[in-house]
Image (cartoon, rainbow, N blue to C red; front, side, top):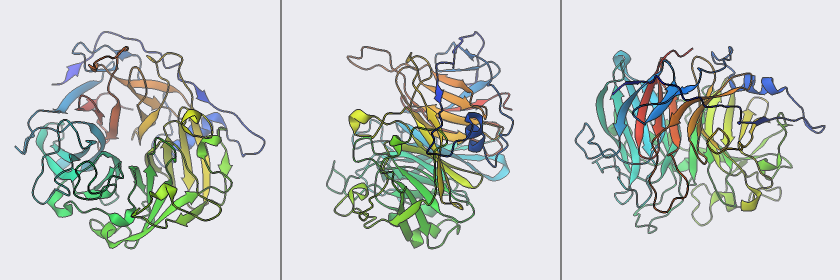
Length: 464
């Protein structure tokens, strides 16, 4: 039910430090200019200072700025409209696809592991591995965000983390696992990308896009000009993940084209084995190389451990969000910890790769907050807001927020999760992370998930 938020809880965003520095060895850009680049090719050239302080939600679900409203579209455990079973748990990445007559097909990942609490129901023609509990559901909404239908879009996949939309109107869902058949009870190998048609799921079925690699996938972004697909690998512990590109045999051909195969390559930044070592905002690297992956199926060895020649390959910890803007692809490293094997520590980076120039630039470095109740660390899912700015879903300690970033580098809170988790033995309060932040095709609604307890929100209001 839609809820208006009235009384005021002021949440300062000033603790979120955006660190920038210049170095003699790199090409520096201005601090504000770094943020300007994030919004290339969008309507975000204005840059606003946010929407004001968050208002306390009397229902204890979601704090928003004054004038904004939310609707709870779906919650885990409730019945699916299709009657196929309960709404699965662990709501994660999400994409809003345009349907006919102003409708929206909201495709939602469920990052269920082998022991997921509420599995995605198995459905004939849509199930890859009956022993796996992850997958996607799809909500069909009318122009007022009323739920017309909710059903399984793909089942029998594992740890469906994020993914991305394609220019031809489908969703690519990514498995963040490398488990093989026989592990955790699985009957098939996992670690693949699957294509999901939100309007007609049976059209895409449950077919792994094996040529796109078998590894701990996180997110993708498609170059709308060439059809090249960029992929991030979320490897938490050493050896860390790689940044990939997939060159399809039949680019931009619509549903089914990615099944034709192609070549998977990994990014090599000459002289940089670990991206965390780069700390200077504006650091720029020319002549980026793309090296063919020796064994995309990782039959014997995970890709990030394979031999890429004597010059090696470039790794990074926690590569997560990925999106296309203007003529570049942007990707996020959520954090790096030297204690876990990274070359240096940081609290979040955003990198920009320009295919036409083979150039990589460190656009943003996030810094820690001194109070875990305030903004501070671990950017995860990111998306461009149609009316201007960038939205970042936080996955860190303490309170969890969706933050907005303006082109001037100002950070402001857009939403705060008020659903406190109950964990046995927990010393401090915990709140579930945000995920799947995305906008409706007409830009009037921001959709976002609370990962736990699984909740999907539609947020409307005076978007600029």
